[in-house]
Length: 453
Image 1 (cartoon, helix red, strand yellow):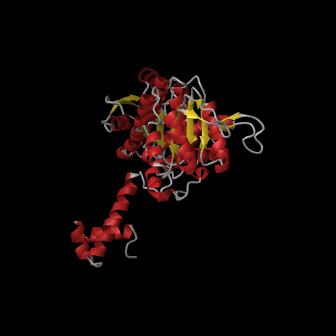
Image 2 (cartoon, helix red, strand yellow; image 1 turned 60 degrees about the vertical axis):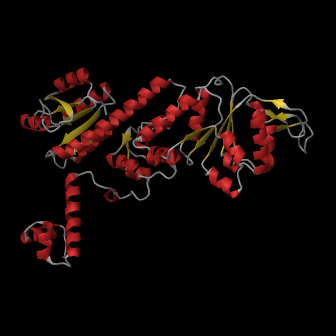
Image 3 (cartoon, one colour; image 1 turned 180 degrees about the horizontal axis):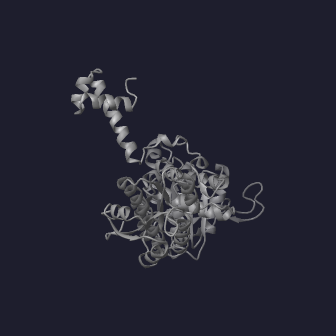
């Protein structure tokens, strides 16, 4: 978040609630509007990251027409602003309608400043994550880091490494789990290099049978083997002047490792069945999800080749270690697939957002992309639900840690009582002393949480 205080616009016509809310957000520069005209005027002047909006505004304080009109204007004028709609108690119909229109979240009266404050803080954090990503995209241009969407400190470090290595010709090894986006970094290295006007040629060492891989890499002369009807250059030769990307280099067979090592040392190749040495000027970038030092110990990868391809290393962290990136990526994928499939999906329901942030993502960015793609296709309304994402282990939202402070307090109280009862072998008098409450209070709490029934 920015060093100065963020602006928070509170749209509320009740003077009592205005005062309560105004003094409840010490970390924000709070501005209050009591009607539609004032709200839009403040929005245009201040461009606040977050707005709390009471739907009941004059001249219709008992209805919701003015509130929804303000919401519609805010979304049109400042689509990045996070709007938290404040509704009446048990008014979930209007709350869901607001979410479907594009509101970030909703909160039901009566107001609990602590709980509402937590929601506002989360909204502001998301706003700044999205703004930082847009800033990075504008700084790097449309082609430099195209496709790389990130806000985490871990990925910012990766971006800086890419920027430093791109203008050089050093052999680069990109390490990371499957699905972390190593191919995107290779494209960024190419786009930001002096070789960007030449070809980027990629070959997956794990996807081609060993018998064919040598001819794919080095090419062959006419008549070199049965079926070699004409002289054909290999991938290395085709990449001359540009960049060669060897994906899953850890799966390269040992005989080809020796031949690749000679090329990297001499910068010349011989086609299969040929005698002439062909000089090739190419930058080599390799990637793998495998543990190359372990393969070296097992005798499955040449140590000399490892050091030759590893003049510089880029380590891509898994998605679970990139705080904030899962939600940012999910929103980007949603926008892309909604456009691609002509679907009216605009965002994620609050429980879906919590699930996206809580899930471990073993398949990394690739898994996230596939789940959002399916969810966009399957969504029935304007918002992707928790059920649309089909995240294992999160089908029941109750399995997640609650954000509601009342639920947090109740869970902590019940667990403390259970621990104390276990320590005192169920002695209520000793348990009340241990907890620092009277016996009647303890009995009431035990009844509240159905302990000892």
